[in-house]
Image (cartoon, rainbow over all chains, first blue to last red; front, side, top):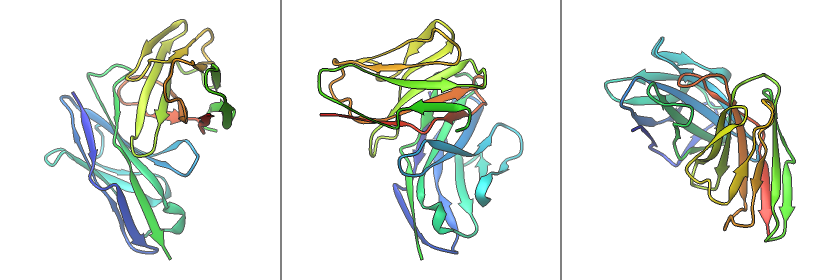
Length: 115
Length: 113
């Protein structure tokens, strides 16, 4: 079985400061991990993905995430927040033994960016 | 639109009526999915389809139905049996299993009164 926990339901930062959104996962097999962003009344947009290659993954809009197997974590970071980063972020896990159905979503972290 | 289009963006219906949400993809991908999103609950899988004329129930299929007569189309019908149909519905496509991501449409917000 697989699961994913986003440790914060809300994160508040000031524009220009670093962003850290935390995600822990549980998987019986080699996982693939994804981060998505969702702006209000929009679909989810893929930010980045980890699929057993390099453990530090770079995504769009300056975001990156590091896969740490020993800590079962896949935290999302950005060096400097922009107002346009304010949105909801979802961490997703899919493991090697899964078929098409078993993608597991975290409950989301709302990122608030203040001027 | 990422190769996947949902319509309409907003939909209003009276209680007791069935309603069909459209989802079309133009990238020839086999797998398509329907999710429901409610505030604070993340995404929950309703149905998915791996090939034409075949589909599988997800975690919350009761009160919903789908068809997959063509590869590019995967419509979702919200029936009158769905007890709480007001929600944001998301359709997604996927290239292959396991290490391919989902690519989402822009969603349909359904309000039933």
